[in-house]
Each structure stands twice: as C-alpha cells, then as structure tokens.
Image (cartoon, rainbow, N blue to C red; front, side):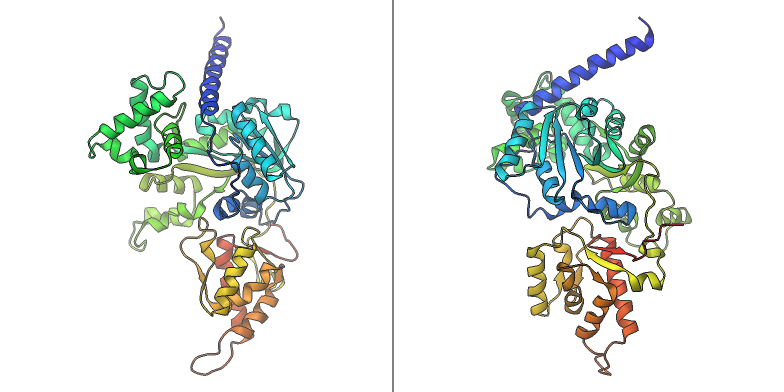
Amino acid sequence: MHYSIKRKYIMDIQQSEWLDKVRQQFDFAPYPRVPLEKLPHDHYNDLFVHSLVTPHYLRDRHIVDTHGKYILDVGCGSGYKSLILAIANPGAHVVGVDLSDASVELARLRFQHHGFENAEFHALSLKELPSLGLQFDYINCDEVLYLLPEPVVGLQAMRSVLKPDGIIRSNLHSYLQRDSFYRAQDLFRMMGLMDGNPEDFEIDIVKETMSSLRDNILLKVQTWGTKFETSENSEEVISEILMNHLFQEDKGYTISQLFAMFEAADLEFINMVDWQSWQVANLFSTTENLPDCWKPVFKGDSVADTLQLYELLHPTHRLLDFWCGLPNSVEPLRSSRQWDMTDWQTCVVRLHPQLQIEVVKDDLVRCTTALSPFEISRYITMSAPGPLFLDSSAAIALLPLWDDPQSIQALVDRYQTVRPPHPVTLQPISPEAAFAEVQQLLRQLEQCCYVLLEASEGTLIE
C-alpha cells in the first residue's frame, strides 16, 4: 500500500476510534450538567465573553449589531453555553452541533423549555460542518479542541465555515497548568479504567483509590480537593472525575504550540479571552530594576513571546482561551490611544450591553443616592485588573449611559455640574479640567470594555 494512502487509512481508523470514545463518554454523561430550568442571567462574565460585541470591539474598535448574525456553537453539549450565546446576542440565530445525540436532545429541550425558537441543533462532527450549508459570523468552540487528535484540523474546519470578518472563540487545555491531571489519567489508564467508556464502576474505583492515599501524596494534593470528600452533590463529583481523572482523549498544549496552530490554519490571533489576567507586568512587585532584556516584553514587541513568558512564570490558567479570525479580514478603526482632541470632542460613548441592564442600573442609582462609591467591576470581573470603583460624581455623570449612548460633551457637562468644588478655594471645576477628568475615566473604563468609544467620523487606521 502506498505510504500516503496507508497513512490516511490509519488516520481514518484513529479518527473513528476517537469519535466513538468521546461520543460514548458524553452520551453517558452529557455536559455541562446544568438543570434545564436554570437561566444564566446573573452569569455576567459568561454573557460578556459570549457577546459578539466584546471581541469585535477589541479587534475592530467597532460596535457590532447582533441582530441577524449567525452563531455556531461547536460541541454545544447540553446547550447551556448555547443558551448563554442566545441571551448575550439578541436577534442572532444559534446553531449548535455535538457528537453526542443525547447531548443534542438535551440542548433542544433546554431551548424549548425557555421558549427560544431562533436556534437549531445537530449531531455532527467538526468535519461535517460544511454540510450545514451556512457561513457564520461567530463560532464558539468551548472545551473541544484539546480532545481532537489534531486540533489544527478542527481550527481549519471552523475556518471553512467562517465569514471573512467572522471571529472564532476556542481554547486548549494548558499542559503546564494541568500536568497533574495528566499523571492521574496515565495512572488510571494503567489500571485499565479507561480501556472503555468510564462509568459508575470506574468512578467508584477512582474515589476509593484517591481517598485511600495518604494526604501528603503529591497526586492527591494536586488533584483531589476536599470537595470530593465533603460535597453533597454527587452529580458534581461525578462530573469533576469524568472531566479530569477519567477524561478520554484529554491533552494539553503550550502557548508556542497554539501560535503554531494559528499559522498552520491560516488564522490570526486577536486576544486572550481573559486578557487582563495575562499581563506579565502584574507578576512582578516592581519592574524598575529588571534587566534590559525584559524591556521588549513590557513594550509588547511580541504577543506570542509575552504570553509564553507568562505561562512559564505563572501557569495558573487551565485554559488557553482565545479569539482569532482570518488574517487582515477588516480594517480596524483607530484606537482612542491614537485620537487627537477633535476625535475626543466629537466621540460617542456607549455602555457595553452586558452592563446596560436593570440590576446594574439599580445598584448605581442606590450608590449615587447614598453618595457612596459604585463598584462597576462587581458585575464583570474578568476584564478588570482589580476592583474598580467610581466615585459618586463619576457615577452620576455616567448614569445616562444606562439609557442611551451619549456624546462626551454631555457627560462632561453633567460631571461639571455634580463634581464638588475645590475644598480650599471653593471654585468649581473648569470646563477644561472636567473634560480631562472624564477623558481619563473613559480611557480606564474602555480598557475593560465597560464603555465603547466611537469617533464620529470613524476614520480608519492609516
């Protein structure tokens, strides 16, 4: 048999075996195990991440309208993330695909239960995506790529159904963060617990084995928390064991491998989903006395190198969670860092739609009425470098954003009205100083994507 034909034959067999293993595991235990009646309205970080507005603004500095967009949820499982996508993107059409027929049926039931009709679900593999006959504005592929024999093939499959200006959100397990669980999987594979699909018998052996180990044994310290011993929710414990100690086809990767996949799939990195938690400078108590070789890192000369350094220094991220798209697919608008004063004076300020909700507005009104600071980062924590408070004057000035977009001048005028006078001279703040303080506040909030700024003329980068 010719080498290339033989290699394809072997790969087809491996692919078939992989499909059977993964399908069996998720047919036995559809994931995530979230009750059908549960709604994610208070999952502010998840809604923020799954809103098309967030990655489009980070890449394009453009505010996208979600109505009429087509969203693909690859590996939709029991449909809970698909529900988050539907809620976070009003008017979008959600298509969910999964290997597991049991999971797909649960996803359909979940959407029927909540009355969401603008969705469809199919039992399909990644290579069958073209059979849908659709092109997508956004593809969400959560907790899937690291299960594939070749993740780059998965990226290529998604690229084939992505619109030219579309965005993919996906992730890989971090090898450096998760190495202890890979040791656990090797252990239980040696014991024969992963020869077939792990079920109740294999789960019980894992429980008995780990519970019987002395408390100072490294594998137990690293992979067996107190929740496994004390949790009253047996469903949660079963899910944790299946998704960690007995996870079929689970593999880990590094940042350098991830960027090699982007190149092989002809995709362009946009940003890490939790970008604030990948800041290398935050790992040092001070950066003033570091050797000169660190200067390019803090200037951001190479995004891939900077992320790899973070990974080597502090591998705390279970997921290498990222957004990517087609190379040179859009011309981004100029960042506010490139604006001149005319841009600022004519810009329109919008609130991120995942903050523009009644519970946040009510909290803001309560704080401003009491003249107490308002913690805006309380609702979306993942994009803030730490707790972020607005003093009462700033909160009062920004309050109209909860109703409609505002010109910066309208916010400045309101701020100038409510800001207390100078404590010594009792002079009110000048219009110039008020503008500068509001400008600085908006810059800070934009870094977290809490506010979105649009220059009125929408000039493209030169």
